[in-house]
Length: 182
Image 1 (cartoon, rainbow, N blue to C red):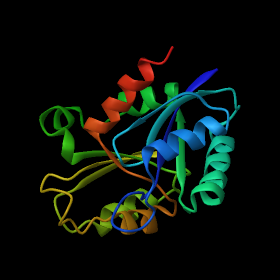
Image 2: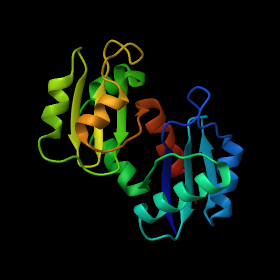
Image 3: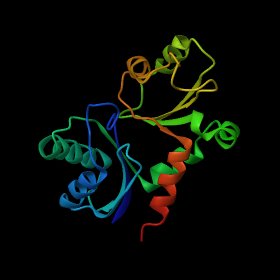
C-alpha cells in the first residue's frame, strides 16, 4: 500500500462546502482507504491505499464527496514521494523558515501550459513572488495573504488549472503525519 495526502479545495471556508473532518474520515474509510487521519479543519487527509494512481483517487474521492456529503469540490492527491518532492523543491527555503505562514505550496490539478508562469507573474500587483515546478506553485506573500490581490481565482485563471493552497506549516505537518503512517 502507498501513503497518500489528499487536499480538498475550498472546504470549510465560510458557509459553503462544510465538511466535518469525522465525515471526511468516514468517507475515505468507506472507500477502502486505511489508516485515515485528518489534519486541521481545512480538508487535509493522510491515508494508505492500493489504488494505483493519484488521478484515480482524486476522481473516486470527488465523486463520493458529491454523492455522500453533497459537496462539490476538487481534490488534489499526492503520494508520499510526491509530497517529499514538493518539500524538497521549495524555492523559498529562507522565507519558509523565517515566516512559514506566508509561504504557500499550491498543488495543481495539471502542470500549467508553457507561458502561464509569465502571465501569472505579470498579473502580480504587490510584492508576492511565484515559482512553478510541474504540478506545484510556490508563493511568498511577504505582506500577508488576506489583503493580497493575488487571489486563488487569479492564480487559477492565469495558470489555466485548479489548485489548493496550504501554508508551509501545514505542508510540514502533513509530511510528519505521512511519515508516522506504518
